[in-house]
Length: 378
Image (spheres, one colour):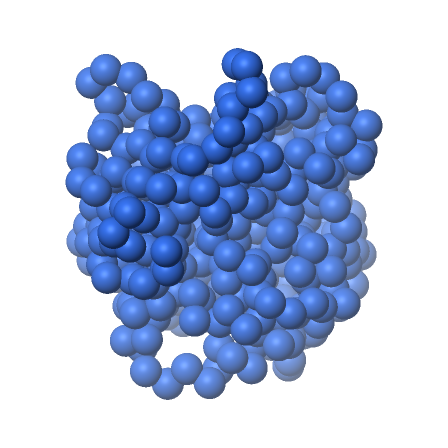
């Protein structure tokens, strides 16, 4: 028996884009081009809700009860709460320049925030490269004034940092003519590396967690840790879209409080969080991490570490304790001696047999049941 798992980074509305997640791409920009084709082909907003419901079911069937979900289209909201699961729906702001923000983008975001949801809302500036600097700073202020948490992508593309340093436009190629309107391109960059630039906008804080964190050196990692910003590592997504491996061993040695995310089915072969945990263990070992706490720290990252990233640990999420939320999962794994975490990390993928979320049975493999009617097979 484990606490319900915490998926600290996903996009549930893209759960019908699973053909992308089964592919292999040269780099982030190559994947972005393929993603854009599928995204622009969606002409019925109701499909986002259907896909999000499917994604929640797949998460519940693999032991996840708490979701950090980036919501690009508002119609995707509600699937988490409808399944008695919980988490935060981070309303995404993307492709906003200073001009578009003034001319309606800001008002549209505030209107989205007024819509009451069944799951708490947060804000997600997509990335410091895809939203103009003043817009990111304004989103930080809005979040602070409303007590909302922040979640952003950072250091995911190998050419992202070149934009912050010198205005290199490659990471924004997908935006076409809009690319040339971005402030960083017009001013030739900001002369800062990724985390330093994000910090200059107020984005790094104990109320923020970032996804990926692949292309960061020691100074940038220290800045993330010392600012209280947590990192959600998404190793299978990184592998699919052709990224280098995140510096997992370095994050562990340097004392980061990590979380784990699957990302979406558009870039990952499944929403089974334990598959990502197992890959993190393999990467850490390959990078020379041989401390005896590896398994316990990675399982912690998938549970209470994720809850801390979402600001939900104090309410008892990610742990099993008297008086806490009735979120837990059962895994059919073979434990040798007292090496419970090792068994879960190495065998947990595909082995969840029962998930309880909010006191309700959300998944029971014995009768092929998943709350919401999603058929995930026996």
